[in-house]
Image (cartoon, rainbow over all chains, first blue to last red; front, top):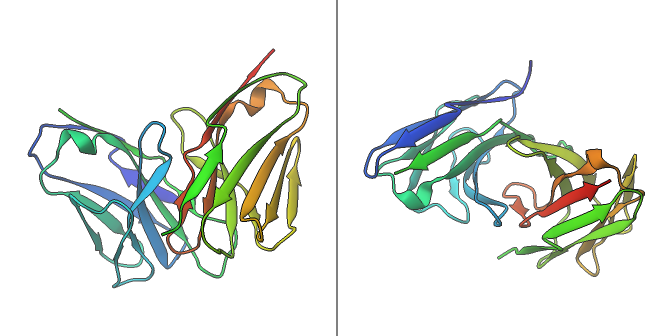
Amino acid sequence: NAGVTQTPKFQVLKTGQSMTLQCAQDMNHNSMYWYRQDPGMGLRLIYYSASEGTTDKGEVPNGYNVSRLNKREFSLRLESAAPSQTSVYFCASSEAWQVGGYTFGSGTRLTVV
Amino acid sequence: ELKVEQNPLFLSMQEGKNYTIYCNYSTTSDRLYWYRQDPGKSLESLFVLLSNGAVKQEGRLMASLDTKARLSTLHITAAVHDLSATYFCAVGNNDMRFGAGTRLTVKP
């Protein structure tokens, strides 16, 4: 099925550990995004990539890095995880000329202890 | 910076009643979206509104947009239990910003 695939679905990290969240889409979209969702705060944009080879900071980029590996894949890296990064992370993709909104992945629930 | 505010944040309704969720945003934008999220699930796109006065309806939900007031509404008609979910409005294109969400609970 076409869509956005995120891995892993669940992860527990210890403070200071690093990890990479993976995201891939098969809809040939140019734009991809990483959001985090915390209770009562909606979704906040971490980074986005408007096209292959470009990345830009969103609202809350501190503590994260991203890589747009190719048109399909956009990864999010936590170099030194902190408890404040405990959240649900969503990847999404879109095509600028389409008006249907973003297509979201199923999310990664990350707990940092 | 674009700010998006929704109210109310929590809404408990009786089945069969009507209610409206409000979404205000701070700067001009050419697109406004409404999404639905069920507990533990991802987001599902409900509506996209592109122009002043736009109105979209799907079942018991109707969304409208007033770009001059920077206001969108999501009206719920004769609520049913299946509408219980969290509803988000979002504004923008390449860097969409979301409201905090309205958690709707419809009680029998």
